[in-house]
Structure formats: structure tokens, C-alpha cells
Image (cartoon, rainbow, N blue to C red; front, side):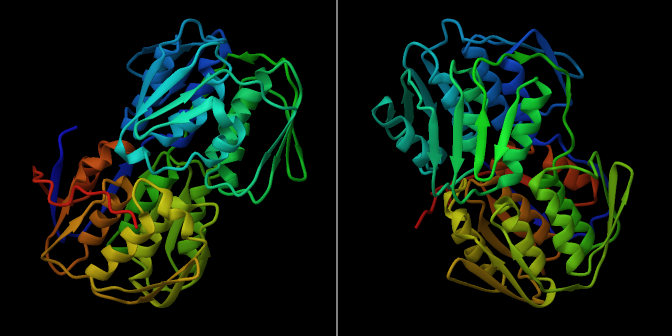
Length: 430
């Protein structure tokens, strides 16, 4: 994808959109189907950059994935037979972290080729577990065959994706395994992985600080319907709070997605939101600042921080330090961006404090940080700014929501596109 910038004029947003299927669930559904006996179907799908990375990686491992107009047809294979020994994963941390344990069960070493956005995404849990069998350079991660112990301890996690990767692999061992997790993070995403495992007839047992996983299990094929993505819906929910009525289709009211908590967050602030079957209707609202814990939902940080600028009083966001390990140093990106827009935001001791209500500045050019969620947050902020906002390197949107700007325009958003000159191309991590 060639770099491009967008110029967004302030404009009222209203109407209806259908958010893409959950990227988190689609990754997991693909991997579960890929290691199952038989053929599975997955619907719906959207070819974001991250999902393309998982599909291409599985194909290189020998899995057959056919694409029809309405579903992905996956014929599973495990053990992987004669996989390619070089597998590009681009900037998809989900692909890398969830496939590494499975690939560690393959006979020969396999190397994952990453782009520059992944070189700063930590692999600390796997470094401790795999030791010399894991070799990391600036743009490669090589894993050799590993004999895993019967008890695995995971401490000081920076991502739940390490646990998800292990949960996919451990049922395939010829031994039972106990997985001990101290200080878990983003636990709803672990629950999503467990749901997919059960869909494929895998039995795991919770204990008070982890899981017991029976060995010698077999994944069974299963058809899977992927619900809409709350992580993406949050941006258009915020648009409705700022403007008029916005309706978001395709969401499961009973979803176990961690980012569904965004509904609870903004309702506690006074948001006018109702569920009607598979859709959310959100309307312009008078908001009051509150305190939120982002330990289990760090991806909500950019948009809840944006919403906080339009809430009366003080909003505090706690457990934000993990944001430095996202596609950008997202903690720094949020602070720099909102300060540039005139917001009152401070950071101290793992906490962001935002004081509103603040009119947002316009006629300004801002960095997209090569971070899809920063680009989406800036797009929503631009709709209420005092003048146009130019977002540099907006192509980052393709990581998760390639048709975001089409949906934005369908709601009345005023977006123009131009080739990027890469003035803001550096990934600033401090």
C-alpha cells in the first residue's frame, strides 16, 4: 500500500454503517480451522492487512484456503507438511504471536519475516519459554522445534496473544500441560480463544491461575460466523455522541469481545445509546468525565481519550503503560496528538488525565504514527475540529479496516486524499 494522507473537513456525521467482522475472532477462526481435520467455512470476512498476513502464512504452512463471494473455505492440515521456511507476516503481531507456538512443533526451523512496525513489539514471553530455539533479528523471528515442559509459567505479560498462541498449540502435544498465568492482561481475548477452541472440539480446563490442557487432542472442522468488531465500532459510536444519530449494524449484544466495554464506558459518561437486535443506535449526548481501567482493553485508549476531551470535568484512564508496545508508542501518540489539538491531557504513574470540555483546533497537520487506531481517532476528532485536519500516512488504516474512509464518507464525512510526502514517516518511540 502506497503512503497517502487525508484532509478531513469538519462535518456532521449521521446515518448507518456496518462494521467489519471482528479481526480478533477472524484470526482465531482461521487458525482453528487451519489445524482441524476436515473443511471449515468462515463468514463474513474482510481482507485487512493483518488478516491477509494470517491467510498467507497459513497457506505457506500448507493449509488450503479458498475464497468464495461469501465465505472462506479452509481445509485443515496438522502437522504442517513441508512448510515454507520463510513466512512474511508484515506488521501483524497477532499472526506472529499466535502461530509461533504451532510452528515450534514443526521439524525444521521456520523464519517469520516482519516489517519495521513489528521490530518493537515485544516477544518477551516466548523468549523466556523458547530460549535458544528462538532467534530474533531486526526483521526476522526464527523458531526451531521445541520440546515444551509439562508446566509453563507466564509472568508479567505484555500481551494476551502469547497465551492464545500457546492455547492453540498445547492440545496437540503428546502430554498434558498446565499453563500458569500470573498477572494476566486483556483476559477477554483469552476467552475468545477458548471459545474458538471449543468450537473445534478442544477441551481445556480452567484453574485458579491458568489452564490445564489435555494432550493428544484433535481439532475438528466447524463452520464459524464472525460477529462485528467492537474495536472498530467504538469510533463510529463516538461519532454519534458528537453529532446526530449514528447506527452501527452487525454487532452481537452478548459478545465476549473485550472492547464491548466501550458501551459501558460511555454510558457511564451519559451517552445516549440503545441496542436494537444486532445494531446500536447512538445519539448526540452530554457527557461527564469518569475513570476507566484499560488493563483489558488497551485498544480503546485513543477513542476514549478523544471522547474525554468532550466530556465535562475530569476523565482518568488507568493502566495505560502497555500502550507503548502497540503499532506505535501509542501512549506518546495520544498525548502529543491531543495536546496539538488543544486538549488538556497529562500523564503520570500509568494514568492519563484529561480535562474537558475542550474545543479541538483545526487547520493543522498531524502524524498518523503508522497506527490504524490513531488514524481512526483523528478522523473522528477532525469532524468536530475548528478547521480541516490533515492526517499523514493514513494508509495505516488498511491494517484493520480498509474501507473505513468509505464508511466515514457514507456518514457525511468530508475526506480528500493525496499522496504522502512522508514528512511524518518516522515511528517515534521514546
